[in-house]
Length: 224
Image (tube, rainbow, N blue to C red; front, side, top):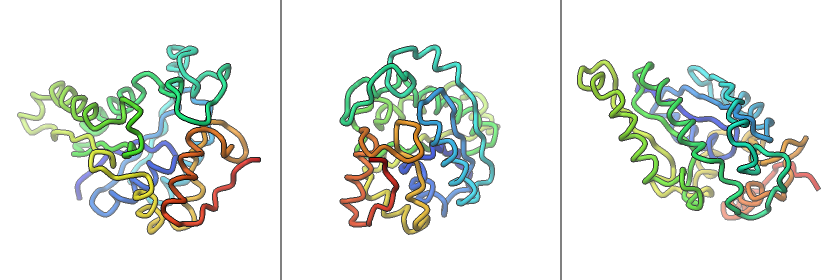
C-alpha cells in the first residue's frame, strides 16, 4: 500500500481528512507542538492516531517557533484578544510551510508519495492553505531532492489537501463521521486551552456552522 504522511493537528479537519485517505494509504502522522495556546489539540491528536491505527505517530516539539513569532499572531501570543471572526491576527506566518517542509523530509525518508494537511475550501482566507501555495511548495521541495528522485531513491512528493479537490468543511465532516462516529466530537478545534472548547473563537464558530450544514447534531462540549 502507498504511504502518506499526514499533518495531524487534533482538529476536526485533519481527523476527517485522515478518515478520507485511510482506505488508500498507509498513514504516518506528525503533530507539531509549536507553542500554540491550544495545547489540548495535541491530546486530541494522540487519541485520533490510536483510534485510526496509524502506522506511526510522531509529536515534534518545535516550541522555539513561539519565540520567533513573538506577538505576530493570537495563536501563540497570550497577550492578544482572540477574535470570534476572521482577522489577520489569526494567521501564523507561514506555519504550514514549516509543517509541510518537516513532514516532507519524513516522507522522503519513508519513500512515501503523499504529504497531506487538512486545509479545506473554507480556509480561503489563509494564504498557506490555498492549493496554489501547496503546489508551489511541493515543486520547490521536490526540486530539493531532484537527484534522488531521478535515481529512483526517492518518490516525487505530492502535497494534498481537501481544498485541492474543492472539498468543504461540511463535506469533510460527513466523511469523517462515517468512520469516527461520535469520536468526531472529541476532536479539538478551539484556539484556546480550556477544559472545554470555548464556542466563541473563530474556529469554534466555523465548527458549529459546518455541523449545522451537515444536519449532524453537534455533540461537542462548548463552554458558556
